[in-house]
Image 1 (cartoon, rainbow, N blue to C red):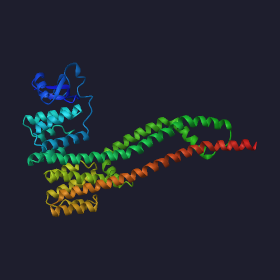
Image 2 (image 1 turned 135 degrees about the vertical axis):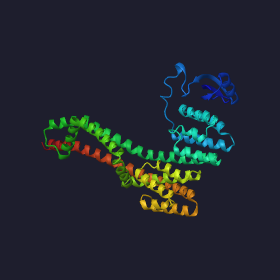
Image 3 (image 1 turned 90 degrees about the vertical axis):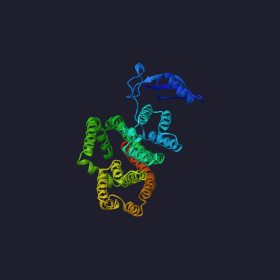
Image 4 (image 1 turned 60 degrees about the vertical axis):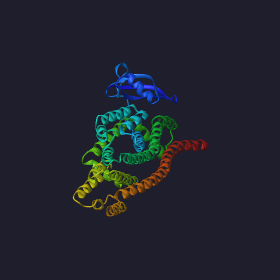
Length: 410
């Protein structure tokens, strides 16, 4: 069945656009009219969602990816529609028309067609791993098996919204210091390369003995003027070597262990990993995913090989009949409170609820830690930049003050 890209207006007079399959343009027109959409333009699209003929312009190569926030919004909409007893196919059709991202809209239409042809929703979503993660697909599969798909989508939406909020907070925390650092380095570099050399020429004309602080400033400026290429090249090579080490088999564990022990950020990194572990595992278990499969999925969302190894050991122990808490306790990588709560959850049969409580508690702690770090980083950055500026000002003013004293004495 051909796929058409259309534009039109709805009953409220708002412009709408989207992709939909139909036997022919006339059938598409009738189908959309029943939905209150009146067509203004129709073009046939190829199987990959790009327009045929001159309008194609390279297909989807210029379109961006699908953001987690967009997937979260669609998940919440699917949960609402399924709870209202709307079929999966109709729900997918409805949400695809609401999506503004053409790439995501195409993917949702492909999922809907696959379900219409007899595939399960989980299998259809599993064909798009860059959009629907293994966690997402396994939870949907469990929801289909248990007949609780609406509840699963609700859980998924809650989980993804929490992850998006956490990512936004971490990004926001690091953005301000990075901007300040880049601006500070840029301003100092401009002073060293363009301003200080002119002042040096003035000082040379004076012919007086320069203070030590001024000599240091001139020396640094001359170094940057003469060897800026070496500084830039060394920085690029250093970053390349660091990335190579960080991604190597030997370097990655060392780097991740260092991150967990780092004085300022180590505690926050561990908190984020624990929150991800608890929230993801609790969501999967609550949706009916077997614990072995759930631990396999959780291992891939931690982002730290040290903790991944601990989860792998825990999976092996659970498979052999042991408890989950014991290998976590032996590793020493999980806080004692977390291990104790997991042990209590296993003993009482409330592991999913206990994991959810851990995730919520750590999200609160992460918020608090981020607020404290932000309040500390801002003044530290300001003080650091102030010291650099003060050094430059004193180095420039001291020779001028000396010259003024000489003129007064003469």
